[in-house]
View 1 (tube, each protein chain N blue to C red):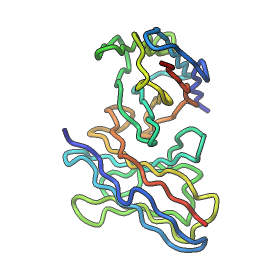
View 2 (cartoon, chains in turn red, purple; view 1 turned 90 degrees about the horizontal axis):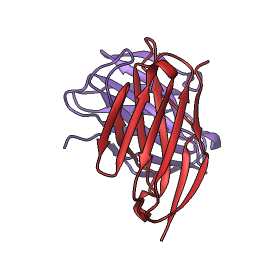
View 3 (cartoon, helix red, strand yellow; view 1 turned 90 degrees about the vertical axis):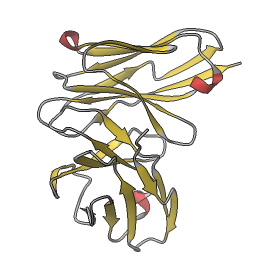
Length: 109
Length: 115
């Protein structure tokens, strides 16, 4: 079946540091989304990025569809960035998003 | 900004009881979904719904689960006879487009605890 792998599984940063999270997927992509799950469990949409690069404030994302990976960049991290970051992939004619196992980010003051 | 809303936010139920989780998708969206997340695990797809019928379901979505769009705004997930292992966060989502395309937006989730 389709695999969605995220790395690293855990990450601890000092406030102000930058980080890169990676998502590898095993099939051609129609839809790639990044989410932040906050401590209350809510899934917050960060990016819809089946290809190319997007930026939103301190966050940016790049998907290289031909090489089947996506990257999420967090710059000047803040404690409020803590939580789990998921990528989710949809390919082919399916309607379902397949989620990765997530990266647990802890930003320390 | 339009959003997907879910009720209740928390529900505790006894094993064997029926529960109905409710969702109001974004108004111009046509595709609706339920996902669940067991504590500490990744988010898993349950079912997608389009044009008043199930368009895709996972192996998790067995006969104890059903979905319905009872009116023009609500979308529900019913679990007929809850088991301990049904305890999870349940997310409703909607998208404007389907067939692999279109951004999906998620509700804030319903945390179901079966005791």
